[in-house]
Amino acid sequence: MPQILRFHLQGTSKGGPFQHAKGLYALVLRQWLAGVVPEAATQIHNAYQLGPLAISPLWHNLNSKNANFFDVVVLADWLVNPLLEGIETSPKEIRLGPQAFHLMRWEVSDSATWQDLLMPPPDDWRQFTFELVTPTAHHQRHPFRKSIVLPSPELYIGSWLERWNLCCEVKLDADALRRVVEERVAISAASGATRSVPLDPGRLFIGFEGQVRFALLEPKTFPEPERHALAALARFANFAGTGVETMRGMGQTRCPNF
Image (cartoon, rainbow, N blue to C red; front, side):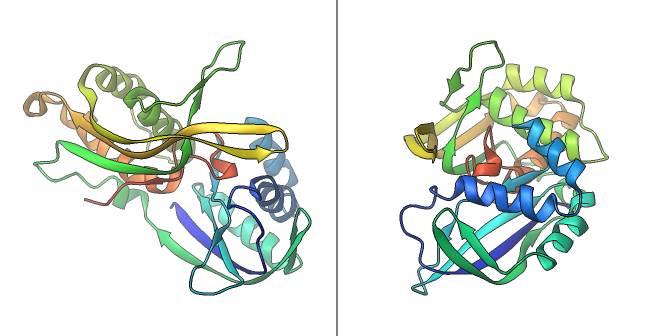
């Protein structure tokens, strides 16, 4: 069952929300998880881009001067208990680079069962709009590392599909869905821009931020199994995020429920 765990930190955060991407990654993976299940933490780290976790940037709470929060999305059920155990046994004083914070509390801010995500969409469901809240990009799988920053149904839906089949016992037919997406899903609207943010010293991440709408072509003859799978993946995107570096705050996605 995908869950979003929200952690509230007290402390003064100097700079933008992305400056702590490396520190939050290390806190969640190398401290909280590695302290309980070191082998799993190493496997997730070595997987690099495709993993059962997503971590948001450190957002500032506008209602309080020294209040901040970040989200950890747990996509795989077996990770929940080890993560919570690691949190309970770790110090509440947290250092992110040179800055100190205190972990005040945490809560489940959102969750959904796999059955919820697999609910059939309405009969008139023909398109869906979603927002990329943080820079979103994909890496071309070739010897040379090449970033693709513009929206693409094949890449976006493909990233949701890979994470779904990694974490959910109910697998989706990847070959059939990819074929249908390539032929019959198109961008019908998009507004936004590319943005560069620093993730590590000396490294800029470039990705797309904005709204995108995907439309199903010839919806009256669109295959029902693939239409249902697309709806499930659109709901899942709220948890999984989109593209690469989702454990460093990139690809944060908001797709309204339907």
